[in-house]
Length: 261
Image 1 (cartoon, rainbow, N blue to C red):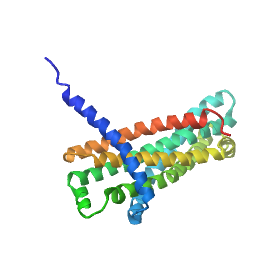
Image 2: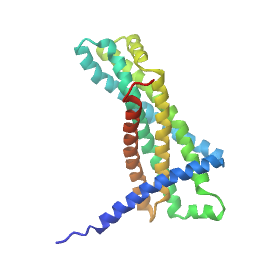
Image 3: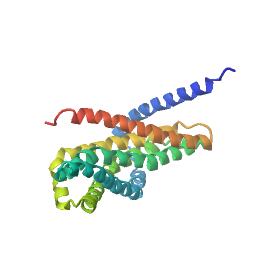
Image 4: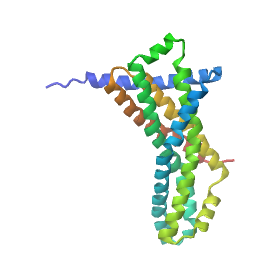
């Protein structure tokens, strides 16, 4: 019996088109941002969503991730008599890579999916068409405030994640391997350069752009009903995770392949 592959092909084509629409939306956002028309009240509203409202899961995950990473790393370093380097290994791997990715992934799951669901529901209920009737540009009113809020708050959230992870790592090293917190923190300070802080903030801005643009794009291109709204929210999170890892790989090649000048 022959299988009908047409629905699968249509689904793949739709996914590709909607991914390409995210790039087009990014260009529109830049143009509207340079034009300077901004709804500050909407920015403040979404800043709370992307910041304080998302802080508890970020802190919880970062703290436990820092302890887990320290336990796994310290076990091997203690075996080779390199206890003083536990904090350095933590700084190189957790602070540079793991904390930014974990934070962006949590924000993508909590905030990016909410953006996709909200805008998707507005699209299928024709509320976005109503904005056009009121001569209000949806990019200015709905998308740009969300993008600005995420780009502002993700760097801040990443700093909170790094600090919480360091505290968790120092606690785990002291409790399970008798590494004095002063030694752990001094090792972190030695290996974690000021340029690394700048890179963490840069990743926050880039990842914030990816989370917000992708979530808004999948929401604005939703067609159908409630089922399609849920699918858009879920797919937005998955595609955002993929884009974050790809971008992090590119940044790692550009920033860490050779020593910084």
